[in-house]
Length: 288
Image (cartoon, rainbow, N blue to C red; front, side, top):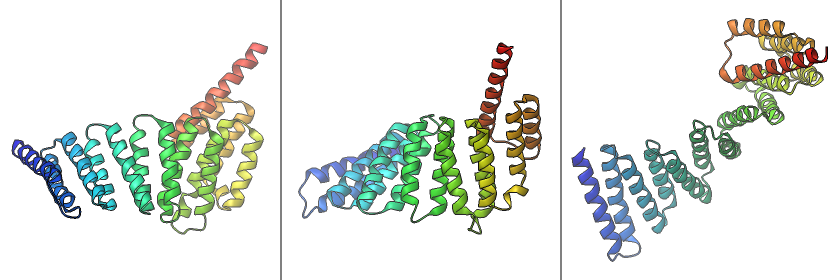
């Protein structure tokens, strides 16, 4: 490893010397870029991630000087991959640079890919607002070229919006994805899942009339939905909410979970519905 670090340092010094020297028509930046790339790769082999990242940034700057924008954006992305090992903040900064350059040269699909990456880096930090911004941006950029990727990003936006109690925004997204997917032979099997998620968000809003209307709309959207376990679950939960019966609610949820395990997101939303029922129960006790 120390051998690779020594190589990295040597290539970096040579690159810096090239830039300071005289070159014809920007050739010195091309020569320096070649040396910086060797330097960065040597630091990578030594697992010296911060140093590799910083040299990849120097490589990106060289490519910009030589007007090689695609290569510059790629170098920023490489720097980000190194910084992911040590600093999410630096990784995000480099990916942002890559996104801006890819947009500038019309490579929207690459820009979308890196926006999605930035969203994924904000996710474990629980910076949901920032994650939403980048997943929304990625979805927009993917829209015309990669429907599946766009939908994955939209689902993230819906998931996070519901976490922030922005239920209406999440409902609109899940219903839109359901509508888009119904006539696609591959995606149509996921429709019941999208409608279930939309229905859970409806339940969190606590408007029984809206839930009933939504279930009718979902049957129109997908005539097979009313025969699914997901539909029965939503209808049964809605009934227990209408009756304000916590025991029945708990039993319905437990039964569904035993057959179709609920993920943490769905569990969180159902717990919110249960807490709302408990609050109503306490209010009524106080009144009597």
